[in-house]
Image 1 (cartoon, helix red, strand yellow):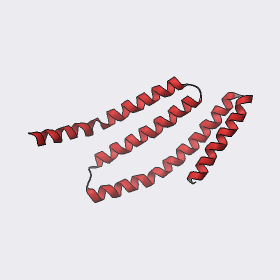
Image 2 (cartoon, one colour):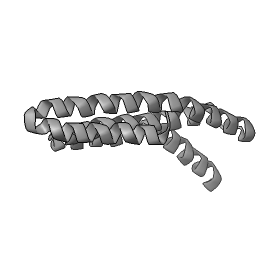
Image 3 (cartoon, helix red, strand yellow):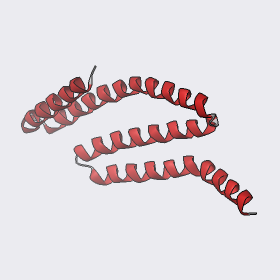
Length: 128
């Protein structure tokens, strides 16, 4: 599936959802949710290429695997948070979508904290 195919899936889903909104609004939400899940799982399949590229980068510059793991977690948190938040907002629950976004930001901060602490330790050594 290409970017064009994903765009067509998204646009067709939205057009059908708008048409269904007049009949039964919840069917439109379900349709958009299903299309979003199809696109989400397709995007997960693309993640394999990203992981391979990051492994190659790691072999070239000798990065600690912990850093790449944290980077992958942050990418996952961002993608899942945006997906869930967007669905909530489309369904008319913007406040819940906002809460999901806040939770995602706090989760990314928590995941990145060990790297920040390692950076501080490195700076402490250079400052001494």
